[in-house]
Length: 292
Image (cartoon, rainbow, N blue to C red):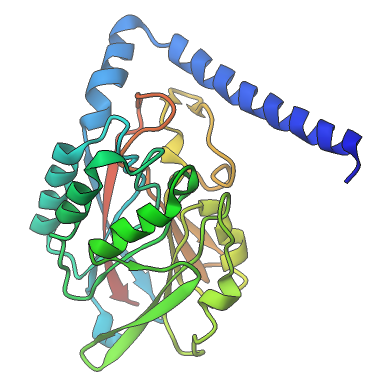
């Protein structure tokens, strides 16, 4: 790459960043005072539990009815602390899922002094079929090894371009994960290297737009976060802006490849960049998987 091309790329990157800031600021400025107060102080803590029953033809009969909880984008250290985390874990325990999945951005920037407390609280989650995690782009910003260690200390299976088999009642499914699409090095070939043609595969990918790659591989269900659903959504307009690799699939349920791959994009628990949410509540998702 010549110096002129490098300069142009840097200039475009800076321009894109400034455009994102301006769009978000404009969206916030459009809110009346009372709405801004709601967006700043009420909605970010108003957790919504979303429940879905999804059917999959390839799901083993023995796995019919299993319950999977997904949470994502805590951004610990920025408007989300140990008290909030403890309340979240208590809620997940009351739901009694079979499997727990975390889809990245554990911290906003760094683990900080509360890392041991985070690990202790997360270790209280003990679903019978395991708990699994991948890293997000924010986990890479300062100290990814510390984030990895924290998740492992909390007894999460960290799925960085790897897979595990979950056994249940004489059958099983594959839980796989890829590294973050933005800051990591995702390798879906490596992650699925031991998958057999008959395997039902759940893939964890922090970035939802990775689904356009996943649909070309033997993946049945992808769980993602990253986009925060836009975090600020305006009536009759939708999301003001979303991050790179979270622009095509922004929130909720999608079917790709004529139904071959089902994708779910979680709106996240925490906030990033701006400590606000508007018409986009934080989300905990509960899936019941059915054979059908």
